[in-house]
Length: 305
Image (cartoon, rainbow, N blue to C red; front, side, top):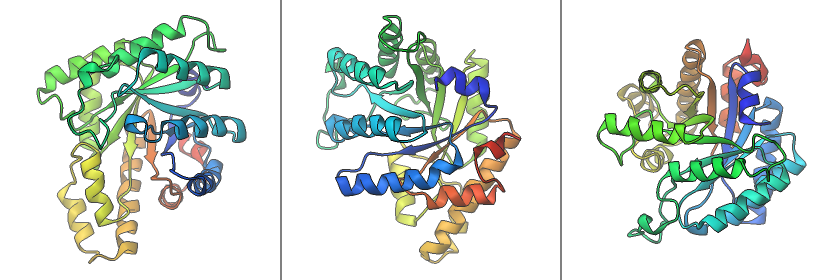
């Protein structure tokens, strides 16, 4: 389903994110997770994309498999890093021929084994360059949907660390959205006030596409630390830190606190008319299933009421 149809037909989008495993065994385990979450009726599921080619072929294969073997709407990530225009065009051709309806266009992280990677040499230096390319591709008629791909982009409620000036940051963000984006998925956050402020600043800037809130429940203390690092410095509120400290390194207790905090976030976001909830699953089903149970619903349709 095209992004425009998703948001016209659903007051609230609920989506899940997965990452491509590195082995066939991992792929089979992922499909078990997908099978467990499919009854929740997500409006779409996204698949991440490794920097520098680390998992790119796996992403392509899994997206096509999800499209063919499940009832889910897959939304593959596509990044600027280490890609030529010809390569991006070939990937879009493959997704179009498979009937994939949407793309999440991202700047992407540099390859981990290349800390001094020079992004200025890429054909697409910034995410708005990639968005423009996909928007232009959409006009060529290669996609079975005459509208072409729905295009999603990333948003940063706590601010993008690459642009300390928040006014400049919003100007850059608007440029990216105006290049052809249909929706926004935010980076994870733990304080809803950060999201609401970001949403209001977008409205003031004239950005009116749906903004989906990124939710990731804390599953372990070590995972939280990795999460904060990978999420470009996500802020951990003091109240959440105190709750986790009371767990005394009990992993089960930490997971319960994480689910409770994420559930409270979701309840508040739904009350404040958020357009979507995007769950970063880490390829596991337990926390997302628990959040749905805590919300008192059996599937995403229940959150529409």
